[in-house]
Length: 141
Ligand code: DQA
Image 1 (cartoon, protein in one colour):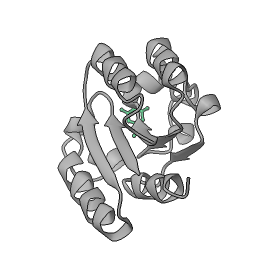
Image 2 (tube, rainbow, N blue to C red):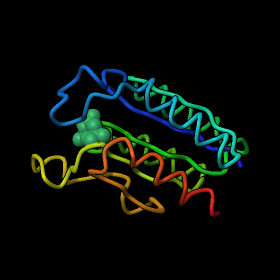
Image 3 (cartoon, protein in one colour):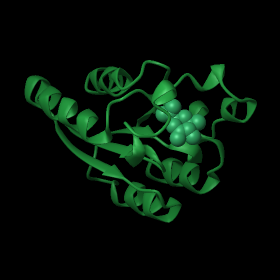
Image 4 (tube, rainbow, N blue to C red):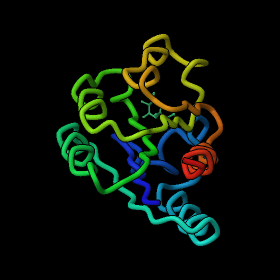
């Protein structure tokens, strides 16, 4: 079981960025928790973050045949990116959409997602725990 954990723009700023909304944990802290979880549950993973839409499209394309599941926090690309949606549809790897904040309790523009209708599941508002919840569901197959 190999899982790609994919993070979009500004998630490299976690811990610094709007801590009242996103909490105090850094992306490195989140990865450290996933490392521990991978030992406990016995899965392989790769952690990838980019601020650039084309890099995420390239990463999704290269995931074909490499990964069983994708855990994806698309950041602001959630609300804008048809290109990444098309990449997800092209590779057809089951994926979970994760948001640290509850996007439905925020601005109206965050209520639109280009991913929710094609995701296996959506977790929003559970903080960094959302990554773990998605992984635990994803490894069930
Ligand atoms: C986010 C929510 C998005 O609306 C926002 O643009 C982000 C982070 C979240 O994890 O809560 O960058 O995906």
